[in-house]
Length: 113
Image (tube, rainbow, N blue to C red; front, side, top):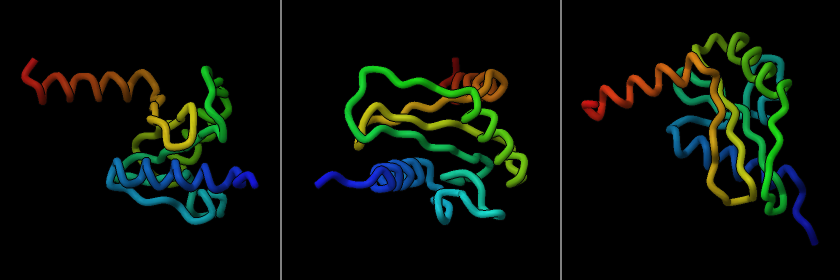
């Protein structure tokens, strides 16, 4: 018997929340007041995963636009899209160029480079 898609999504959301010290949103953010899948400090994170192993993963522009709108609604400073190629696989994060530049410079400063 195959597991429902929600099983895989919940697993990914919990993994991302644990990684970032955040929390998952009730009903995966589909309520009027709680948006996004994961909230971690000043980040709203939208999570996307597959139920089977894939060699590629298409990112939809609408997902990024929705994440940004949820960021605004939740009054957070940043948003990201987390995706994985399979259940229990490594997550990859998509952020806009301004957020990436801030992260890059903070990491370089932290490492003294």
